[in-house]
Image (tube, rainbow, N blue to C red; front, side, top):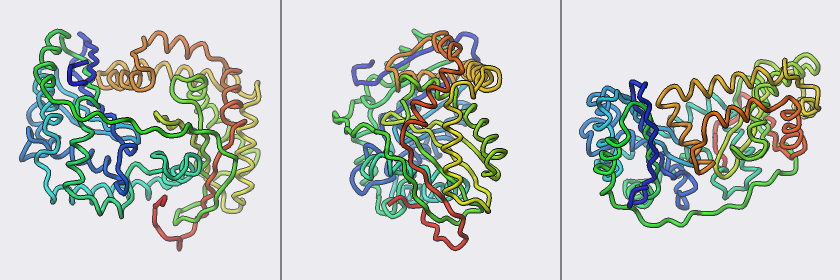
Length: 419
């Protein structure tokens, strides 16, 4: 850690051709002020475009011209992440540009650029929810579980009416308080020499002053709800169900088993719902949505037009129950494939500097340390079919869930608001 509070993690790889830089700010909706819903996402958009080192070009364009690399960004309910992927020869330039972005955040932003990015966030929000309405209704279900004041009760895009009220001063106040080295982690992986890069990092980042100490907000632990369902209408092509369960956080007991259970549960539920209950049309999906304040299992099931949604929900609950019964999922047909895919995906992920940086960030986020790959793969390989069934029973079937029964209605208003 540097004296200004910046946490630094380096993983050199002499066989790589590129390097990856990740700057992860511990800033998200949990840090937004009252009536500031969407402020963190707006800042992420502005940091993609505004930088003193890149002016008058947008940061991503100037970065590409100077380094031949790419500079994507990502944003979750927990953090804001700035990523640089560069040829090894341009790593020092990339580190300098990233340090300048940290030292002088949004120095070139104007009221006009804030207004433009505000509209971009709202456009992204509408586009994404229209393309995947189930994602919106998953947020509605999550809100039922965590309560209206919890940051996970929000969408990651913010609410349009609150976004419209945000101006340049709101942005600058928020950035000055939160986007500082003492709230960030710098990860560098790939083609570089450790001692040389340490010198560059200390030179570029070491003199950036820290921000004020921000006491972390605390929220009540997320507990399983009483199982219930809400019926809503939406202008979608078909009716569907979104069911959400709170489950263990990454690397807690049961999480790895559930990660391996997701593809097996999807395949089992798809067969069960289609051929034994006649429920679904085009889609059955299960996915884990991890977060620092809570993790959720989200199931989405499209429902045939002649099937009552309440009956379809009962069939989904029955499918989860059957999958949780030891013996329903076999090593050969239920769990073996997901285990092999998990191991292969992890090895492929770590074969590229960007993937390695993502793995390091995940370890630091949830474990507070970097764990050896061999340890994770050995643990995953040891998981058995009964382990997976038991995890489904303990953390899904035996726990409460919230379901949203979405009725397709072309005349339903398009609001996409959780408020």
